[in-house]
Every structure is written in structure tokens, then in C-alpha cells.
Image 1 (cartoon, rainbow, N blue to C red):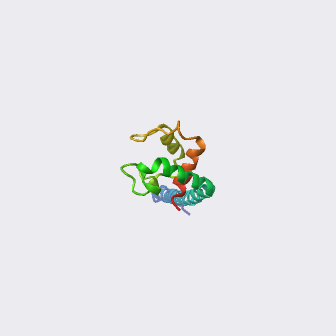
Image 2: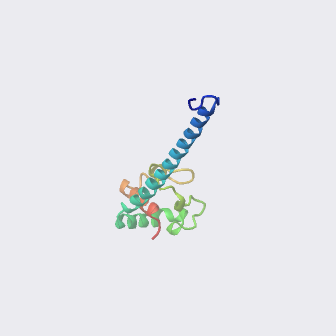
Image 3: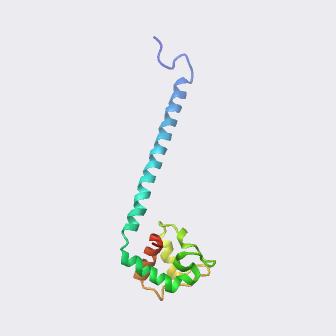
Amino acid sequence: MAAIGVGRPGRGARLARIFRGRRVASAVAVALAVMAVVGGPRAVAQEAAFQPEQIKTGADIFARNCSPCHGSRMREPQGAFDLREFPHDAHERFVSSVTRGKNQMPPWGDLLKPADVEALWAYVVAGER
């Protein structure tokens, strides 16, 4: 009796490549599914972590200091970055931009307390409601 793959050179290696390719494709599919599940609830959980008072405080600070450039209630920014499009996973970038300034935006770090910057972040992430 002949062993599997004997008499047909390369058949075993070819089958191994096929199965290895399927394992890789399956692993990629599982990884993408996990990322989708983990990423979605994390963003929702982050928004749920903001207290309504914090969002309201952020909206008030925004109206006083940010709306002339970024638009009333984050609508129709006058050449400034559209904060409705700001990535919700970029907290450090937001804090740095607000406190140190960026491009044409002046730094607000001397005028706003850290709690104020966090309130602004809550407002930007939660959006206008």
C-alpha cells in the first residue's frame, strides 16, 4: 500500500499550503470580527461615561470660546476643523491641540482649566444633542 502523497510529487505540500491559507484567512476574519465588536462598544461606553452636566459645561465653554471659528453648535465651521469629524479615539491629540494650539488655532492652555478641556472633549465626543 502506498503512503499518501507518495507517487505524486508535491501533492502533500500543495495541500499543506491550501490548509495553511485557509487558517490564515480564518484568523484574519476572526481578528476583524473581534475588532468590530471591541471598537463599537468602547466608543459607546466612552460616550456613556460623560455626565450630562459635563457635556452641558463643555457646550457652554464651546459657545463662548470656540464657536466663532468652529461654528455655532459645531455647525458650519468658518475655515476651522470640523469637530464633528474629530476622531473619538484621539483624546490626547484633542487636549494637545486645545492647550497648545495648532495651525491657526491659538493655545487655550493658560485660559482653560484641565476640567474645562475635559468638558469640551465630552461635548465634542457626545455631539450636539
